[in-house]
Amino acid sequence: MRLFVANCLILLYVDLASQTLIAHRGYSSEFPENTLISIEQAINHGFDFIEIDLRTTKDGKIVLLHDETVDRTSNGTGHINHLMYEQVSKLDFGYSDKFGSRYSRAKIPTFSDALEKIERNVHLVLDLKEVQYISDIDNILDEFLFEENHVSFIVYSIGHGLEVKKYFEDARIFLALFTTTKLNEEHLSDVTAAGFDGLAINNRLEISSADFELIQSKHFELIFSNIGSIKEVDPRFLVNGETKFIVDDPRRFPSDYSNSILVHTKNYILFHNPQHEIIHETSLVSFDGKFSAKNLEIDENGLIPTGHLSPGVYIARIFTNMNSYVLKFYQSN
Image 1 (cartoon, rainbow, N blue to C red):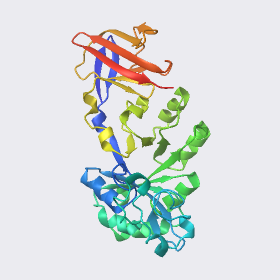
Image 2 (cartoon, helix red, strand yellow):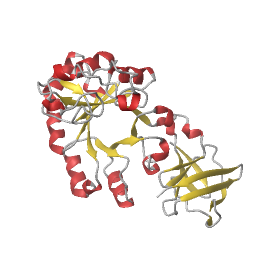
Image 3 (cartoon, rainbow, N blue to C red):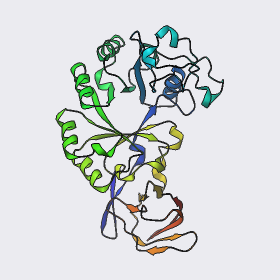
Image 4 (cartoon, rainbow, N blue to C red):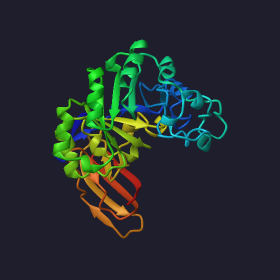
């Protein structure tokens, strides 16, 4: 990030190209999730970080699967913990509801199958749906010579994370956060005391100003999941250090997005100013002409809040000493 001066304010210019993208279950927008072809294509498309979900079959085989059952992504049914590996290995995991018969030969990979396809310079993000086989995960990673500093774990309780730490002292551990009820001083202090590195936050959570300040005060590393495009990201987390984003499709999160001067994201307009232009005037009008405002509130990070606006189409304008910028956007609920 770089600094520039505008109207005597020190604003942050956010270099969005510095943000880290993590391939969600491989390249899952174009290929069946958690399959070998999805992993291979994520690597081919330049992902340095790949997230996969790990579960176990009835006979203890560690396989790649997000859901508790095989129903959604295969032509079979049943809880993965109740099925033998021989049974699930015969199923079609081409995710026909999404891809039709295009990938009907896709099979469920074991963890070992996946590691055979992943280069050692790729960083693994392992979403642990279960932790009772963590010692087996440790052995498999050792077998394939994966170093701990190239592995991160997403866990679902502090107890699970502490179990992981018994085997992986140098790996990074992120506690999954799917509800704001866990956003309190006591719980986050417990996360810090456990020695975890950060939080894996569901992007659908509505983070209040108080919650945001609490997260920032802990200096956690952050991973955000359920990201469709950069426009869905809370920009407060873009301007406060590097954040990692788990994405299905990197094309909707372009690395050169920082070339855009005005960007409407989640309840904010984000103003980039790489040329250090001086702001003279700002305005915002609704497309139907029923709302208008000038001299918009813009904070030290270049953020203009829009969450207070009624749903509808708006036009924002910023006039500087060098240019004028116009952005048309839709504000949802």
